[in-house]
Image (tube, rainbow, N blue to C red; front, side, top):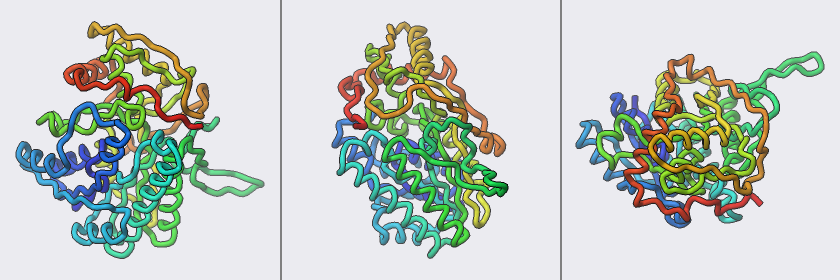
Length: 382
């Protein structure tokens, strides 16, 4: 297939580009380096330095023989989005091109406004480019489990059937985002559903949980092909932060009581999920939603797993509760349904002790690059 990846330089975008190219698809990766600029401006750069997108594409071609076409463009500008779509004429568009950090979106007015404009403008422009240029193309949009919040009922896969006063109907599952970033993702879903209803678009919205890891089959070919591995409080997911804290000799900082539960998945499973969605497209006029996770953990459970694996490698790992900088429930019910991608063939990589130890060893190999001052919370929700 002709595959266009929006946000192809990101933590997920770059591994996805390599994965689709290695599978024989014709791949174009587009980015405007927004994440790199924000990371530099907030002193939140990744543990392992990564070459530019073009340099990585050249290296990937040299070691694998597979090509990735690279475009540097600001997709929040309509003309640039339309030009990229006309040039690539994609059959599948994988949309990662959003400001992905909840803490960044909560820093202040400027950051919230930047998140709103980038995320909604890119999605809006993508929708219209598809309608006007490639109306049969399948949009695979990365959503987030954070759209749902933490309701006191089971979280269905995107939709819920309601019976009210003797009548029934099917609705999008209620959303209750916990950050402004997650709120923009809710707006994405609503906007996509509007245009699916009106124009018969084909859309798969993947409600993804936090991702961990830095290994993929393609990244193992050369260290310079690894994805951005952030461990800071702005872009680093909790697993990645805990791994780096364990190696740096810092206590694993649990926010508040640590009972916050989320659905997690390995980076390699993100690649599986996205390719399964792309190779099994939604029907015309369908907004198909999958909950993209493989396991549910509390923050305390994750800390204990990292502590156990770290001690197995001879690290002295401590766990420390600190005041929670976020506004969130610290103890709550959390039971998401996530069978759709498994039904398509997902084969999960679970967070075993061996998996944690392997990630710790990769962090140990880059220990000299750790900047401890980047890890502690620098953003408060209020």
